[in-house]
Amino acid sequence: MTTRTILFDSPFLLGFEHTRALIERAAKAAADSYPPYNVEQTGETRVCITLAVAGFSPEQLSVTVEDNQLVICGRREGDGRNESAYLHRGIAARGFMRNFVLADGMEVEGATLEHGLLHIDVVRVEPLRQVVKIAIRTHP
View 1 (cartoon, rainbow, N blue to C red):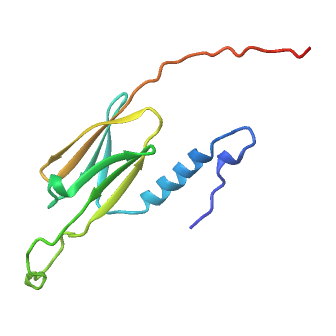
View 2: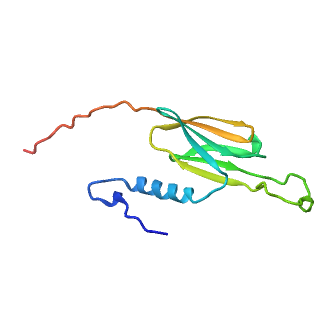
View 3: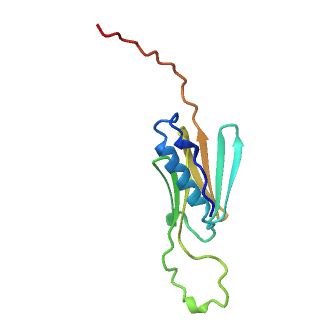
């Protein structure tokens, strides 16, 4: 693993410790490869994340947003089948947790499970731009 210089160490970038932690979390999440996923730009301010979750029911999946982090979990309980009955088991039967770091202003609109694919629609809500004038005081 190579070490990288993080630009957020600059003395001119104040209060970006949270951003640095988000980048480190994103790098850690990128190293995990299960389940496979796509991220598709579906509009100027829209993204669709699609995860391959064949065999999971909606009750076994959860999609939450915590602290600007989209967390998708799949939990498998015993399906009642005898494990020794498999001659080959190539379809993963394990639970998972997949994380995506969301920028400020990104909101999850909804999630749809269709044909073994979980689609999560994310949109960027444009914040209102405002200028705040700061009064300058003088000391007597």
